[in-house]
Length: 245
Length: 245
Picture 1 (cartoon, rainbow over the protein chains, first blue to last red):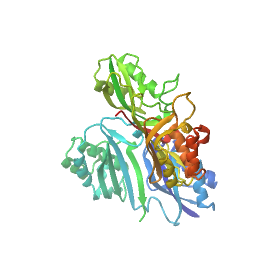
Picture 2: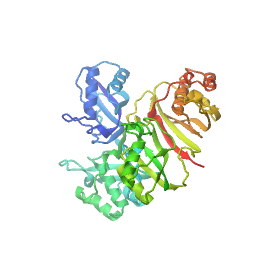
Picture 3: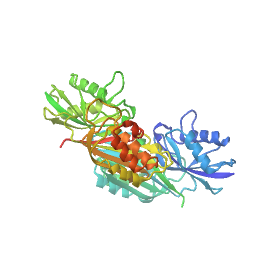
Picture 4: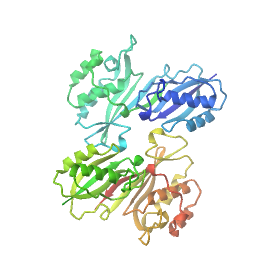
């Protein structure tokens, strides 16, 4: 059995997220379907991150096991010809037998792109969210920096997933101004369900002056989703990179 | 009568170009339809450049005349709420009575974005063309520079438009490497129909080693469309800017 690792890029707009669901067009379904055509074998594709409906990826990592002996470059080429235009393989490699894309991930980097100002921008609509309210960017930058470190992020988790730990370490949490855009960059050892989008939604409340820095601190401490802001829309979010060392 | 000038951004993917045609979804049709709802008046919208089917714009300029006295900010707001999501007004201003978006344009800048390398890139598919052949970029840069100046570009015109002059001046014609992408930037006092895409298609022949620099020079001198390369696909092309001074 070979354990094969892929780097994937996808446009999440027309996918119902990563994970296979009955009848829904998901990334997992499309890849497993293409792999079946190539390997004549049903494989189970494990992602580093189960991205949500509408969320994009430039560096999603997956692995799967196969008995097939087809050379890797041929699998890659065949995948890229069978996969739909909104999903592609950027790299393929042989992984150690025990490699698990999710369990072994050490770091993930997400970038959330937000268009500011009153203008709609048609060329950006699929790959950035839009906020037309004036924003206090330095205050948002301050708030974002408070999230760096080992913290309990329960307040930013979409829904309780039982007794599992909600403690994660963020190595990077920043807001960068790029012309008319803000880039929210988060790097951490793991992320709770909807965590990035809930953090962005809450940082926007800070930026709009709806809540203070002290409120932001209290939200983090509260460990209660109801305290935090709304979930920012998915089209701004890209899973940029997953590291294993 | 006021003469009103707009800066438009649009995603050309789902438009059949700028110019109104029976039953086809065009930019002109959508704007004139929205303006009719706002002004209750049929207006004729004149563009700086009649972009083709599938071509994008970040800085298209148009003008139209109206008897309506509705304040400009209100027209802009109403347009942006009535126009479809792939078309928006970025600026609105009052122009001199004789201002004509096409006749008075002094300079236009186009950028053509090309993805190189063997990878398909799903997140770029609507806004870049893709060439997976290896390219000699320095040679393409040399060829591109030969187009700067006042020249007869008849070889790069899609089809003859009668006896009209095919002489244009290019102020800028360059190929820039940006990571995995090439940006072809052209700035000139005017462009013939399909000229940018035909130049890019011919520069790609140079880059792939199909024709030499001397061949490229001969193509320009031939003043014959049949000598030049194929028309590069539209999704790479963006009308970036139009200047009037």
